[in-house]
Image 1 (tube, rainbow, N blue to C red):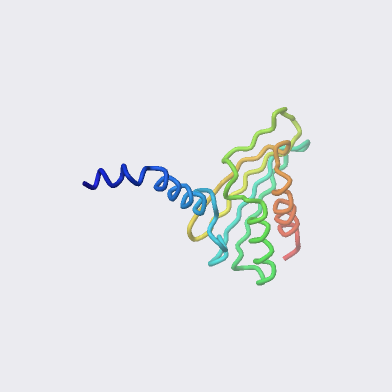
Image 2: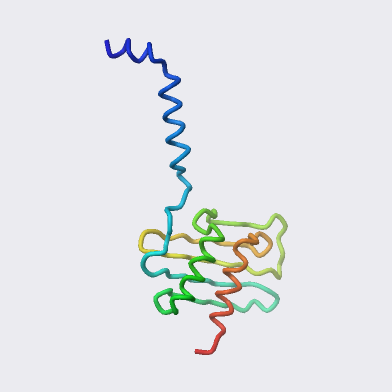
Length: 139
């Protein structure tokens, strides 16, 4: 009897409902306010370039002013960092180009991306620039 009811109603209404639910809950969607609760730890390493000098910076939002912490969180959100693949490689290699390794950790997730300078997404550039400027400030 239950099997007959499914056949009478058809699969179309059931599939339509499932598609509607799937559209509302995307597996790549970030939760509202992602990473906004608790500290965020960021590590950046830049290698390569003409001189081959390594530059490293570490940043914890709990050591920043509330305005600075909000700024860095916004830069991470704007770059869609947690959606980036683990490796971004330029289509044409460059011997003197920089290589970046960027890791962001929150209480509920961690993600590391290795990036060739020629593949650096424009949306990620403001975060990289901010981290480098902050790391160079005298303390």
